[in-house]
Length: 181
Image (tube, rainbow, N blue to C red; front, top):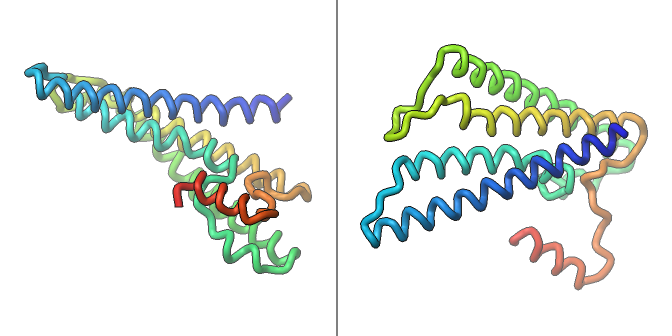
């Protein structure tokens, strides 16, 4: 049940990141077309920037769990199995600590913005805690994903974010095309 809940959390964050990507597209198109026909989109640049931050941070956990987050696999793939497992655990521990640190401080910053009623200084005054939610929630979900993966690896399983090596040359090309290389 917990596995289903966590996987649903990561998937929901990924979908929400996709929604923000669509919002960015719509805002940028509105700004571009509006400029040509003389229609101003108030604070459109601010909303696009906030959406970009929300998209990036909300998408991190899903990207990590699907194995698409940039890693140093070239180094770890060449290690013997025992050393590789120790390096994976060390990397997950360090990653969980660093992401946890940033998630804690992002949540604290968002709470302080709420508490002090910080407002944006653009054309449209928006309470700053609202756009900061994407940043802090995305980091919190990524911290959960790191801890989830750390527990999974510590219990003797292989990391879920690793893909098996490509079996055919076509699969190498397909993976390169998927990654945008």
